[in-house]
Image (cartoon, rainbow, N blue to C red; front, side, top):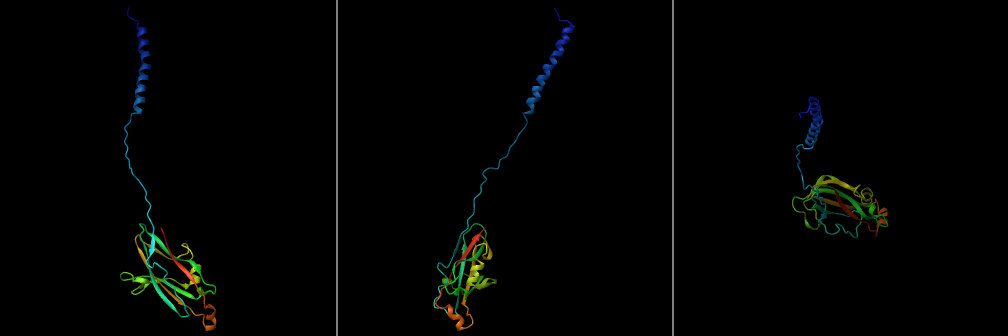
Length: 201
């Protein structure tokens, strides 16, 4: 027996929600199926550089004995770096002792940067040294030690390139206090100082 027209209409409209559900599933599924692409820059790393300093003196530049007012001397020293990065080089005093009679007050030093036309002479000699335009320091040992006692207060502040060098001439004089009577108190005394070069990047 054939279904009535009314039953056929009900069946037709009942099928619509089911079709919509199926359609919704298709749309929902499609929204999670987009194209994608990636690119990767792999293998990134960071390696630190190195700082190292040395000098060609090997021992104390000065070991003056039995000096008297008016005496003096000069030595040269070259500071070198094998660093792989550039740095700022400074000079400061270390382990300073002006002596029990303050001899360090009368020892004046002048530190000058410069260069040699070729290799530096052996033994701290300054033959052929050409001074730069400005002295690094001109002062007594006592004043130098007070003014430049650490890297923060160091003298020169030279931009040292990787693998670079810096040559210095150090002149000293025993300055008279003005008369034998004024100089006599400095007899039999010893002043000592370390010249320290430090670089920081």
